[in-house]
Image (cartoon, rainbow, N blue to C red; front, side, top):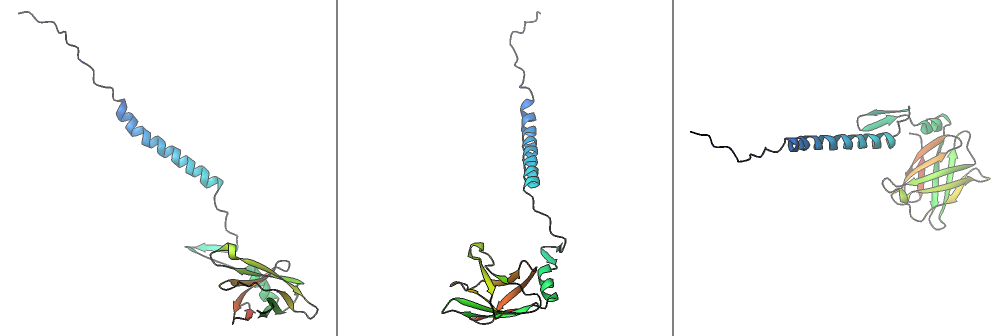
Length: 166
């Protein structure tokens, strides 16, 4: 009995590198995505809250320094709107009243609808300015940036406004 020589060639199975790529490719993509996200967060992150604001859950509480200053100066006021001539006549009471005040009419969701009115003090001590034609649904904020105070406003009727610290 003689042994026949083996002439058939057997192919080696493919090396195990395919499964290695199937494992390492998602890991490498995750590392790249994570580092990219970290870079964006560091570069464009939110600014820290001011010290007067403390964050508790989703709601922010804090001291409004402009309102505190208005209380210290005992500032309050009322305004009449003349819709025929588009004029506003503001009467302020308190100490250290400035020559000009700003009345901000702001929309709660659309900043493009916001308006800023400059009211100038006249000889009689009242402030006058031009009232816009469209002001429905806008919130009121009376400010004196140079004096450092601000007062929220409320619309009592179609032609009267009030500004108080409470």
